[in-house]
Image 1 (cartoon, chains in turn red, green):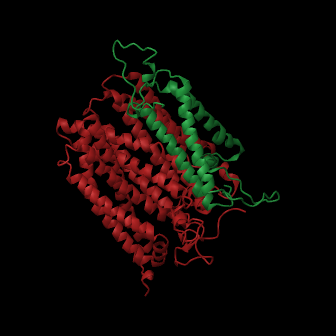
Image 2: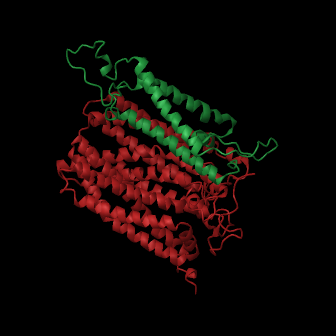
Length: 453
Length: 165
């Protein structure tokens, strides 16, 4: 039996890849983000002479090391599975992206060398911080380069470039490559920020010493500033990304936004609502402990919380009650994506235009306002170690939700390739290589140029 | 010889008196337009002109096909330095929104630039003393560069024009 015809019992071979990739991506994104945030923290600590930045950076570097091997194990196992289960796909990718994959491998080597050097030299180079912090930044940039290289492959599979496979440079510049880079770059920071906040909250609740309570209270604040700050950019970058998908793979766009998998985006806006409300609620609580009392500022932030909840709820309203057809959760008819009814759905407030646009832009703008107020208060200082339990639960909620968001959006990107090749098939490479039989389309790859006459 | 001053302005010392002799020793004081500024501008202009002359000789722009007035497939593209604005049209499609992308938002940006002296009153030149303005400026440049690349990839992948959506 050819190796590509191997069938995995019970779960099937299609499920093997995500089972390995999901933990890999969650760990890899964590490593890329935490490395950069840790390097920046060390730099800030060096400038401000505040010890908690350095303590945080050092612990984060240690966590990077610990997770690196685990993440790489998943990556390697995933790669082995991909070669075994989808040899045609891998062979094609290897041919088109040989240089990308080679560079990616060297980035791994560079990152692991720099991270080890960075962590191990922490004490030895305590008096040469200027140089030491450079180690962290270089390690972070290696990680970032890894993501940028592998995004070539990830984006190409959904939106292959309008260039022959031999034109190496042009195969990089597929329609969603730049947008995906931007979306993931910002997403990594946001994801890791919320994870830091959640972890800090967990440790804060278990702290027994005053020193630890102060430190983990501060760490929760530091994480949420990163998480929430970068989250504010995501609606715009996500819109840019979806716009590119719409142009390059319109059927995939329809499938995701208006078709059978549109429930993913209903899920996304619920996750956004939780992260926004929990973050701004945390800000409101934290402002009680500002060194310089700021009642007006706190009242304004409380108003922002109301607006955030309003705009968030506006986003959550679905366009119809045909919610999740895959599990039979349907009430009534589906909006037909092929006619202009999409602009006049059964539930008018669920229409994308103008209500979802208003909701998303409103969320982002009010979020910027709330964050600016919070940072203004943070500039004068907080009393650390006095936060209430529920404020820490809010941080934990953001951490759990951001993991779910990563999984939701990762699934959305990959499942989009199920569109456009009949109900029982899909694409490994969009309009190029089929999912079930791993066969190339008759015209060869890439598919015929998509430009309109 | 024109003196090109570098580095931060000298701090005003207590009791120091600004006179006609020492007034030009600091950046933040008014300077005479002639001859110092004129000579500096002319020098830079002459260097730029020389670069353009050399480039036009070494890398001449070729003559392309004569204009075809009867074509219906020609896709007009802006010059590369306007690609980032071209990209905005993708985000603001249709007759109702087009003005936002290419008129209203750029106009607001230009007004913002005019307002910079009132928004940033920090007298020092050093970027480390003006973190807010540095971050904002960096973000603006980032937006322009990323949109430039987005437009480039779009044009490369849709040579016949972006499909309507």
